[in-house]
Structures are given as structure tokens and as C-alpha cells.
Image (cartoon, rainbow, N blue to C red):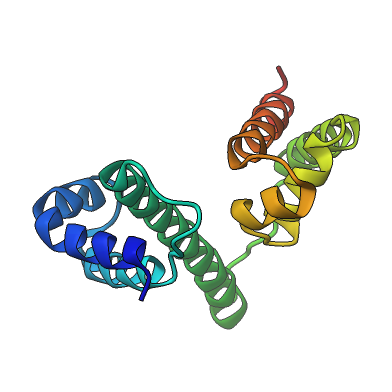
Length: 167
């Protein structure tokens, strides 16, 4: 086990009450224990390079990412369950014509904005959000800092969000 992983594992224990409070604000109470377990598993994979200067901040950022991931997964499961219920129980799940047109327009705006992203923002966003490559790996692959990768992802998300909202 790396020194970073060992230090972060110890920090999970000492910061457990704060972590629980933070996770409870973001997740259903029923998901908090799973989030803590996932956090612990992710911490075990943390290498010694690069060294982590502020381990507490790193841990809380990692916990926020875990909460975000689990929240998205819950939303995805609920969508799938709603679709399955509609199919099984005959609930009409066809959107109205107006809803379909709005969604189609929104999708077109987002796709146009994605195509208009400049390089390397487009490549970094695709590697992270489409191909699922972690930010650290993208930074190594492209020979840039992790901060640069984060900046490009934030820029892409902002532009796509603006396009989605019609800004």
C-alpha cells in the first residue's frame, strides 16, 4: 500500500463524522455507507506519485466525486426502472410532440456546441466523458498538468451547459 493510500485511509477514520455529514447532504441516507466503502476502495488505489500535499482536501474532493458518481448512478437506475415499468405495465411513456421537439432542439444545440469546441478542449472532454479516461491518465497521455485537464473539462461543460440552456 502506498504512503498516500495509507495516510488517506487513516484520514477517513479521523474525518468520518465530517465525511458522513458531507455525504448526507448530497446522497440519500441509504447510500452513504456504500459511498464510504467506495471512497475507501478508491483511496486504496491512490499511488505515491504525485505526492499529495493537502490530503484532507484531496479526500473530501474524492468523496464529492464518489457522491456525484453514485447520484448519477441512482438517477440512471431510476430512469431505467421507469422505462421498465412503462413497458411492463403499459404506462404511456411517449413524450408529447412539444416535449420531443424541445428535446431535439436542445440536443442539436449541444451537439453543435460540442463540435465547435476548440482543441485540446474537445479531445480532453472526449477522453474523459466519452472514453472514461481518468483525468490523471489524460494529463500523462497529453503531457499536460492535471489542472490543465480540469480547466478544459470545466470549459467544455460550461459551453455545453450554456448551449443546452439556450444561452
